[in-house]
Every structure is written in structure tokens, then in C-alpha cells.
Length: 496
Image 1 (spheres, rainbow, N blue to C red):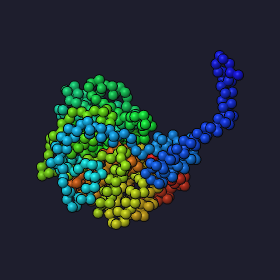
Image 2: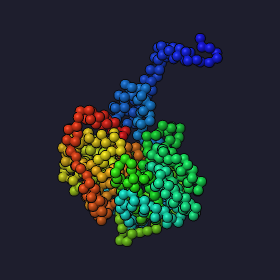
Image 3: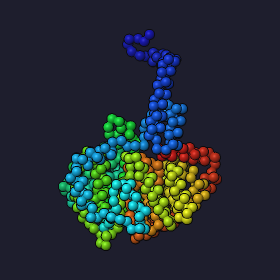
């Protein structure tokens, strides 16, 4: 008997002993776990995008239900619920605004791409957006150039500033951004800041409170909105967007942290790329920010919708390409497949990670086998070991097909750049990994202009000078324990 006065240590031990020896109880627990596992397997079969993924999850759920069931409901979801419905809601509520924006941008859209660029017309169907002309794009190489340009634009803001980053840190760079935003808010400029709650999980609440107290509207993305989405934590809003007055926009790989200025304690340097945009496409980028802001806050700020710049001679043809886990079509995967399949002479891709599914690897191999110069640039020193390990598993098949892989040696490579021939170049936030292709909200700026492609080519050629080309022996010559870890990492590739 347990004394009425409470549970002493001996009584607690006795109670646990009885529970552990109660086989009836454990029978029901195990039976319940298997029932949940079977229900989860049904969900896997009905929703999985790939047969391999369905088999892998089903086997894990059946064999290890206690561990696999919670892992599946946190990491196994491939569809971000609620976003598209909220966008339709916003369109219904703000029909007049949608019509105004469409009418304003219509004269700047490209009705038909030239024959040489027709391969990329499918990207319009993929994003439900259109290429526009009259744009000017400036390449910003590394952190100093990027944040100098962003801060100059913020200093000159008169009406509004939109800021969105995956990571914002309360360090020297974050404090400088905070100071500038507060100053503009005090001047009467509307300031909106959006950040990802997972990427910025270390952001001090005081940083947010100070901005809010000074009139800056700031919010996390709020992935887990809605009762059905309480475990929707495996998705990230990985976009990095700054828009100032509808005049200029900035998109690329940089987050807000001193490491992006090359001041990392872990790496000797930091290689990243951003672009500054002026022209009608800025308003399209503004719409992408507002979609995320509406999801987070259920409001549409009053902004300007008249293009404030048009480059002479029609400037550069440009498409802001947002991708994410909100629809039935994997936009990130199809973007890379479009770029790879369109390549005639070369496709160069720079990414901090190379962890893809069979479709992308097959496209890369086929491109190389038809004579395209296929190069993948990735870091020499990793920031995350599992994706770094998984890359080794592809070396043998890539080399056999003629795909060349380079490891950047001058610090950490974080840029996300794609170059196709001298016809298309892309700078954005999307990595060449399964997370960016399927789980993250991303944005890439697709530019169809030969002068810009030449700039990107010169930049990447300089980067290749700081690379070491690797081949299959970088995997086959390693000890067996290392190769075993590589294979384990490859199995985990779908969730890396």
C-alpha cells in the first residue's frame, strides 16, 4: 500500500516495478503503437512523393513505431498546409489591389521570349509569374558589397522598407541593421521585418522588442499556424529579400550575421553572392514578400505599386522565381531540371550543398554525356557534416558520366548561383539539396541577359581558381568506416 501522506522513494520504485511487470499494460501500449504506425503507413502511401520514400518510411514505422511515428509526423510531411488557402483569401479580400498591380505590370511583361531563351518560358507556368523587361541588375560579391548597398538603400528610404531574412543575429551587423531601421521608423518610414523562427531561434527577444517599441512591424514567419499544423516545424522560410520604396530590391545568399562579412570564427572566409535589382521586377518581388507577410500577420501593408525605374533599351529580362512546399508541383526541382536540360554548352552550379534526388543527378549526368560542360562547386570545409558526407556517395557516378565537382578552399562557400551557357543566370537562396527543392520557401532571380551572364561567368571562373577538383578516389580511397558513414548519410538525404 502507498501511504496517504505521499509517495516516498521506496513507494515510487515499487510503483514503477509494478508497471514494468504489468504485461497487460505493455500489451496495450505496444498494440496502440502498432495501430498508430499502421495509420501513419496509410498516410505515407497516400501522400509520399516517391516510392523510395514511401518504402523507407513504411519500413521504419513498422519496425520501430515508438521512434518512427513521432519522427514521421514531424519530418515526414512534404506539404505545407494552409498557405495557398490564405493566398486565395488575400486575393478575394484585396481584389482591387490585385487588379491594380496586374494592370501596372502588364506593359512591362515580355509577351514572347526570343527563340534562344524559349527553353525558360516554362518557368512562367511553374511560378504563375511572368518575365519583365526594363530591369537593371547589379552583381554584389560577398558581404561588404552586399550590405553596403542594402544600407545605402535603407538610408535613402522615404516611404517603406521591407526586410526578410532566414537568419537575423543580434551581433555587430544585426545591431547596425536595427539602428538604421529604427532611425527610418522615427522619420515616418513604414518598416516591416519578417524572419524565420527556426533560422533565427537564437535571436534575443530584446532585439525584437526594441524594434517593435520604435514602431517597426516585425514578425516571425509562424510556420505552425493552425491546430493541424502544430508539428509543422520541418519547413523553413529561407528567403532573403529587401525592398525599398518599390525602387530597389535585394535578393541572394546573405543572412544578417557577421560571418556573412567574412568574420566567422569557424571559417577563414565567407563566399556569398547577392543581386541588387531596379525596375518593374521589384514590384513582383514585393508581391512575394507580401504573400509571406500575409501568412504571418493577416494584413497587407499599403505600398506603392507604380514602377519607379525603367532601364534604357528595355534593360534586362528578369523573373523572380519563388518556390516552396505549398503546391503539388515541386517548383525547386523543376527549376533545376529546366536549367540543366536547357544547357547546350555549359551549366555551372555553385551551392553549399549537393544532396539531390535521382532525377536531378540523372539530368546532370545526361547533360555531361551530351557534351555539356557540367560543373558543381561546393565547399571544401563543411558547416554541416551530414550533407557533406552524403556528397561523397555521388562521386563515382558523377565522374563516370563526366560531371566535374570542385571544392572551394578559400573559406566557406555559401552562394547559390546557376549559369546556363551565356543565356541564363540565376542568383538566389535555393541550395542544390532536398530541403531547398522540397521543404523550404525560396526565391531565385532568373536573368536572361548575355552581359549579366558574362559577369556571372567571370565571377565563377575566379572562384574555380580557388577550388580543388575532386574525383571518385576522394571516396574510394577512404577507410571503410568513412564509406559506411557516407552511405548512412545518403540514406538520410531526403531530410537533410
